[in-house]
Amino acid sequence: MKMTKKARALEIIRRLKAEYPEVQCALKYEKPHELLIAVRLSAQCTDNRVNLVTPTLFGRFRTIDDFADAQVSEVETYIKSCGLFRTKAQDIVNMCRVLRDEYGGVVPDTIEELVKLPGVGRKTANLVAGDLYGKDAVVCDTHVIRLTNRLGLAEGKDAQSVEKQLRAIVPPAEGLALCHRLVRHGREVCPARSPKCGECCLAGVCRNKKG
Image (cartoon, rainbow, N blue to C red):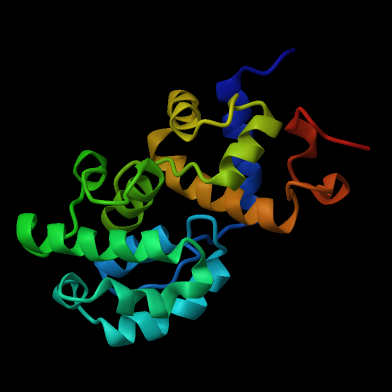
């Protein structure tokens, strides 16, 4: 009997929970605005690289006001190794100015408000709303898009389209944890090249199993 997408999603959730019982955001942070900045830095950059950069960055600029008052050129010096550092530095300073001037120094708790901040797209907004505030969230990074396509849960590479498709079949309370588990699985077992299908806990439900 052919599995529906909802049934496949539930089975994938069950298997990934068994494989990775405890999952959390890979980016390290202590304050709400630090997560917002770390996610912005993670664009086209590894989480490990971001985690190497942020301790010094957050040591120099400790508050939203510190970032809002910062010279973009100085922020650049701390984040050069993250790639696209000029654009990211400008976005970080601008988003903190908006947080200070329009949100009273408080990171918004909804996706709709978060995406109004400079440099913040739906991926960042979902992660921040989910991780900080426990809101229903579906974080579509490159790992999630790749794996959900391979698994037959979604089609296409557009993050917003994949998010919409996943929201239609994944229980809202499971969305964020599923995405965290897919990211971990994508790194450890199912990379873009040479996926380890023989070691994969999802082999029985994957549309693209090899071997």
